[in-house]
Length: 318
Image 1: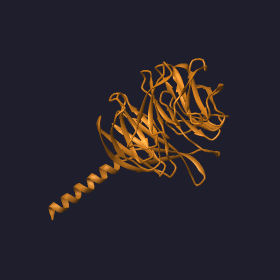
Image 2: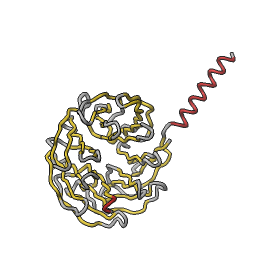
Image 3: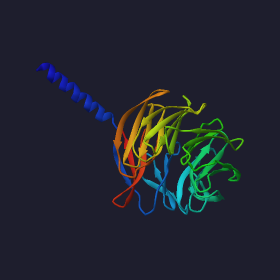
C-alpha cells in the first residue's frame, strides 16, 4: 500500500511539474476593426509587436499588450521587416504590389516601392542591408536597399515563394511551396545558387534557422517539420506536427522549435542534438491561429486569430 501511495504521489508530482512547465494561452488582446491577418513581427530592441491587419498594421507594446499606434494604408498587408540601423520598417502590401516604408520611431510613412505581383513574406538581410519581398503572384523576389529604398534587383525563383530566413552571412533561404523545394539565394549576387527538394516534406510553408548548428526547420503542410542541413540541402530528419502549419520559430536558448498550426495547436519540438528531435508537447490555441512570432527576450509567443468575429492576438507563455 505504501509503495502504491508513493508511486501515485510521484506521478501526481510529475504531472503537476509538467503542467507548470507547459505552454498555454495566458492572454487575449482584442484588436478593433475588421479585415484579414497574416504575419506578426517582434522588434525586440524597441519592444514593439507589428501585427498585419487587413489594410493597416497594428503596433503593440510587446510587454504590456497595449496598442501604441498603427501604420495605415497598407492594402492587403502580409508582413513587416525591420531594419533597425536605418530606423526604417518595410511592409509588404499584397493588393497594391508595393512595399510601404515607415519610420520606426514615429510610424510615419516615408514612401512606397513597387514590387512584383502580390508581395507576401518580407525579411531584412543584415549582411547586405537589403530587404527582400517575396512576390507570390510573380514567383520572384524584389530586393530593396534599406538605406535609400531603391530597388536593387529582382530574382526569379521558379516557383511560388512562402516564408524565408537570412543567415546573416549573405545567403537567404526560401520555401517554394508549390514545388516542394528550398532555394538558396546569394543576396550579394542576387541569384539563386541552390535548389533543394524537401521530400518527404510536401508543400513547405514556414521556416526558421538554427545558425549555430546550420539547420533549417521547415514547416510542411504534409504535417511534418523537416530539418535540413543548410550546407548540403539534405533533409536529415522529419518530425510530426499539426495540420496547416504557417509559422515556425526557434529559441536557441531552450532548444525548442515551435510550429503554429491552423487547426488550433502549436507543436513544440525539442532539439536533442543537431540531427535528433522529439515532440515536447502540443499546445491548444484557437482555430486559424496559424501565424506566430517569438519574443526571444521573454519567451512569449504571439499569434493572430478571430474568435466570435473579434480579431485578437493570443499570448502564449509557460
